[in-house]
Length: 480
Image 1 (cartoon, rainbow, N blue to C red):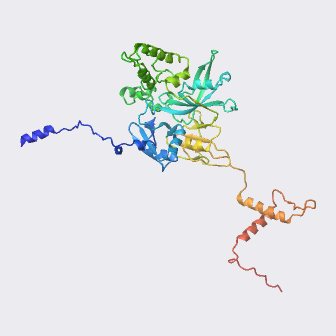
Image 2 (image 1 turned 135 degrees about the vertical axis):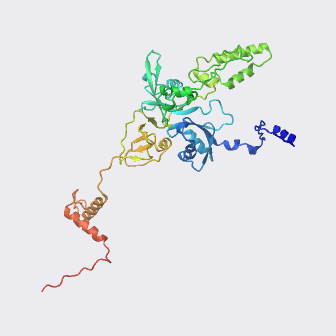
Image 3 (image 1 turned 180 degrees about the vertical axis):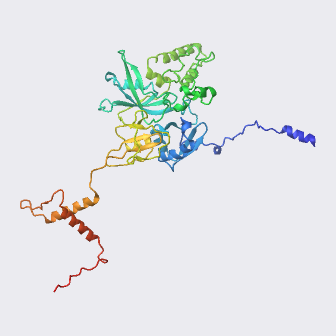
């Protein structure tokens, strides 16, 4: 009995090393359902609650009953849409925010690339471009230093009254969003180009990044102790990139150098895409030595001939899509938010507040936009529009949007307008006919006499009384 018990205890184990095996059956796979879905990631999870994202984003996208959210590990989430059009509408809108902090959204991919959920499509505005260099190539060359350029909204044949040019780039979320950049012209002169970011709200005031606030910034001197103790991890701000190198057993060894396959200092991406390197290795894998020498020369020439052609390097070596030039200068236009130069708006009864302010958040930000369309305002400010007879001024804070009341119209009250209408009708019926034209002339002044007003008021009161309840008119007794 004791021997059997000891043997059973020895065979028992608290850990089961055998993995769980799933069979390759369609019922275990969700690939078919994930085809019409997007994957997102919160850039500042300390200030963004996942439960709020799952429940509130479908309402802000106006697909409340046509999208379902799923919380994933590592601050990621997934939204499954019922229709392809709703999914494309959300992605085409560009950058989205929740609780004033940005998030990355990309369509689901079964085998995502390395930069998946690490780039953010942003429309930027370039200001103060020199007049002698205001060309499409100059704009594209300047925008290449902020990310991969996808669209350039520029039309030299139309008037440019706004003072800026819009460019859409795929921005790396680990880089700072600088408000200006110096450009050295061929003449040696250095000019400063102003930069504005559409649909981007909050960022760190210390390092200008989207991944944290100033309280958790590793460049903040007050956080040095927290970084040393491990309470704040600085690794998420600037990811370390491994520089690719060619090993001795690589078919490309001796054909290309480590500098040819290294990291581009401007974009932070490899100079040659992995798919292109694999094609080169396969192309060089031949047994005939003479044929190999010919192919080596061709590979070197294809790479070295593109040293001065930046656009060729992007399209041929990095497999990046060329930018699209459009004459629609308002394509995908959004709002520009400024947290630093906005005036403080006092809280009065005239201000209409769409959400309650949070304690300790007194800073306001102001919308920099000459005109606000209903579509862009609904997607950017995530609030319902209010139509009035005059233009409204939007002043927004971190906790919500505040709509200042428009200027009140100097208009008489309703009862006074009704009296004036009645007087016009009476004067039109009693006015004499014009002998020449045969029309009735209206003889009245702007302000009616007090006696007429009193008479009209009495008539209106008499007309409203109930004849059934009123006492009959009786004649006075005959006086003898």
